[in-house]
Length: 459
Image 1 (tube, rainbow, N blue to C red):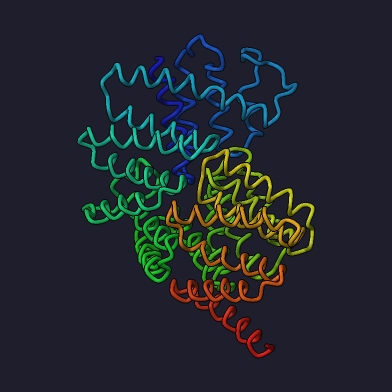
Image 2: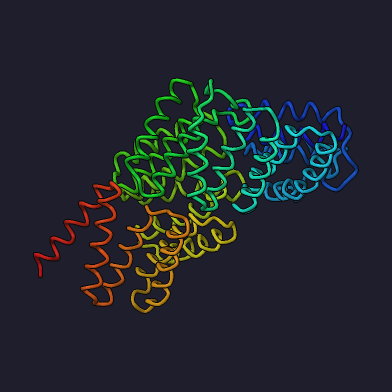
C-alpha cells in the first residue's frame, strides 16, 4: 500500500503536468488509488498532502477545500490555509514522498518505475528549485531508462534531459544529444507519448530548432520549427504545436519581426487556453509579452507578463519562466517610463535567475539590468553597466547562446554614445549589425544600417 501511495503521487503528478489536457483524469486516478491506501505515518505524507500537490499543479486551488479539509484531515480548519500555504505543504512533502517511493522502487527492482519516479521528481523540483536540480534528476532518470528494454521510456527521459540541459545553459551538450536522438527516428512518432503526454520525438525536433536559434543559426532553426509544425499538425500533437508557436515568437523577436511575433503569440495562447494547464499558459503569456514589447504595446505587454509571472511564482511553470517574465517586465516598464518598477523588476530578475541556476535567463537578465541602468543612471553607473554587459558576454561564450550577443553590443553602443565616445559607438553598432545580418535577423540589421547611415550623413 505504501508503494501505491508514493508511486501514485509522483508518477501521476508528472503525467498530469506533462499531459496538460489529461491533468484532471490523472488527479482522479491518483485520488482513487489513495482513497484505498493507508497513508504512511509521517509528517505531511497523508492523503490530503498528496491531493494538495495535485491541486497546486493543476493550478486550481478552490476545489481543494471541499476535497481535503474535513474533520479527519491532518489540518481540519480553513484558517490560514491560503494557496501559498498549500503550495508550501506540497513542496515540503516532496522530499519525503520521493525518498519513500525511491526506496520501494529500488527494493522491487523495477527500473522502469524508478526511472518514472526520478523523472517525475526532477520535473517537480524544476518548478520550485533550480535548473541544476532538474539536470541531476533528468540524467539519473535517463541512465535508469537506458537499463530497461523500454524504448519509449528511454526516448521520453532523453527528451526531458535535453529540456533540462537547455534550462541550465548547457546548449552544446543539449544540441549533441538532440541530434544523436534525431538520427534514430522511431517507427512510430507516438512512441513515448503515453509517458510525456506528447510525442518525445516531435518535441526533440522542436528543441533542436530552439537550440539552433539560441546558437544564432536562425534560418536552420526556422526550418526545424516549420518541419515540426507540419508533423505536429498531422499527428494531432496539440502540446508540441503550441510550444512550437512559442518558439517562433522567440525567433521573431530575435529577427525583429513584430507582425510574426504577434501572430504566433496568439496561436500559442489559443492552444494554452484550450489545454488549460498553468504550465502552457505561463509560456503563452511570456510569448505574448515579448510580442507586445516588439510592437511597442507596453500596457498589453505588462498585463501578459504579470499573468505569466503569477503562474511562475505559484510553482506552475518551467524553471526559466519567473526570471524571464521579470526581465521582460523591466523592458515593458521602461516602455512607459516607469523607471522605478523597471529597476525593481530587473534587479529581481537577476536575483531569481541566479537562485534558479539558469544561465540563459541570467544572461538576458544582465542585458536587461544594463538597459535599465543606461536609462535611469546613464554614465554615472558606467562601471556597473560595463560589468553587467561583460558578464552577459561571458555567458554567451559559456553557453554558446550567440543570439544574445548583438543585443549586448547594441547596449554597449548606447553607453558609448552617452559617454561621448563616437568611435566606440560606431564600433559596437557595426559589430551588432554584422552579427544580426550574419545570423539572419534581417529586420534588425536593416534598422541598424539606417541608424549608421544617418549618423554618417549627419557627420
